[in-house]
Length: 68
Image (tube, rainbow, N blue to C red; front, top):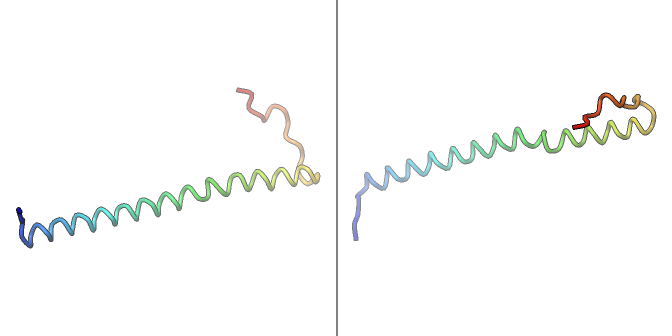
């Protein structure tokens, strides 16, 4: 069995600490930026739809919709 001693163990542990710190940081940033995109935008569409239905907002003109 091959061993690399205490310095090898220390080197691997520092590398793993950096890797998991970067992984946590990246997941935090993804949650920070994607959560408003995936919850806020559809929620605002729902609120606008309800206001238009109640007559509090004017109806969208036909030119404002994208026809492809």
